[in-house]
Length: 362
Ligand code: ZN
Ligand code: ZN
Image (cartoon, rainbow, N blue to C red; front, side, top):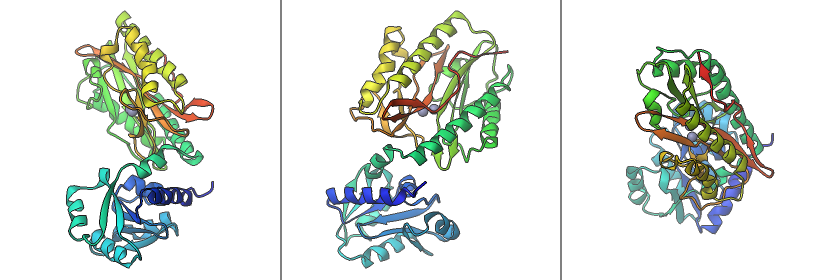
């Protein structure tokens, strides 16, 4: 696989030109990783049309050389990264207008720009790299596919272990061990395991509640491979499902299937969301589907684009998005079914291959 980084940096430099910036200071670690490969937790990156320089600290001396190679000049700064930044910027010719990432800078660091960095003009920018990241290349899609495979295999192993009397946290433990065993580098977000009435909380924290017979058990979790995330949800019934379980489950399942099949590049995030939302509305559960249909995944578990009522933006070819309709009845329970799909020239391809049919355990 050819090195994608020079292409990404060239695309960003083109954006700098159209934004009339002499350079860009990057503070988002995910954006820095995307452009340079550096996966450490402390870095600043400066991109200009002629120079890419990454500033990090002593802890990453060896790692940065391995990961970044010669894609960027590396400065290992013994004092503060900001001291290194001022020195570096002062050495660059013709630097006047420098962009910074408004969504990824703390206020105290912004103060540094306007005080210690007062000799440069600082311009706010938003989503310059995020929009490049929306369009995944083949290597990125392969990693997300691998992360999706890890997640679905971990779920198969977990489903075999679930039984009445286990707590949500114990199930989360089984799930997270299985994710590690299958090769996940980390947990993109704290795994959600929610049982019984707690499954009606769309973003529940796993608790010490013990699973009871006839509970819905909702599991929402992800895997990470090569820095790329997957994000999957399945809801099962522990014991026998009743008619109400079946009815709600079927509505969410069909909404998921329709949206996963119908979503494509070139459609707006709003139209994608509507595929599932209209179906759930017509079934009479519209009020109980209170969140948006999905979001992009990649180096981060929530990234551009958004599949939401409020999103007019067109979905890009190469985007990888989640499809996660849900119906939640407070005090009773809820169902969410979440899959990951890649939008390509032929429509959408499913990356998470775990059955959507209702599973009754035990
Ligand atoms: Zn999820
Ligand atoms: Zn999600």
